[in-house]
Length: 230
Image (cartoon, rainbow, N blue to C red; front, side):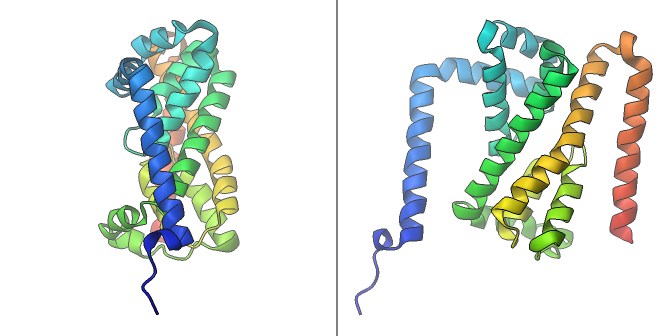
């Protein structure tokens, strides 16, 4: 029986097509908006939230869409934290709308990252998890157990997103359960990040609320650590 060529394998052919599409999208983005994208990414990871907010405002009516897309890209890459964009969203659009935009953008980003890791970069995800004996034990996240675990883990504010995405990608959790878990878990953690970031920038007006929220975040981490030990 002749050896099967890679293009005759539906899974490998789909992976190759996805890689080509992503490469073309990246090339076109760089050709037509390379400098703008480079500037946005630099501001998004610089920590200068007020400069980032001012830059978003310069887009006028397009500010919300630009912020959303940049937040999606950063979360899809799972390399840089998106906390500064979340803070900027709170400053520009107000807390309710800023939380909504950041929540939907972060959830969309980690779902895209999940698909990429599961179907294109599974090897990289497995290597990331292999570095931690604790993470290696989390191998069966199928069904209700997986949804509950992922939702609870996503509720942790400031937790490295890429690690949780890698766990989901190599586990048995379904795409549907992963999306639901992230919609549930991402909301409280994103809300905390947006409000805390907003109140740090406006410390004099919101110092009391900031103190309460920081305490809440610490208690969440303590509760998670206690639960893990149990």
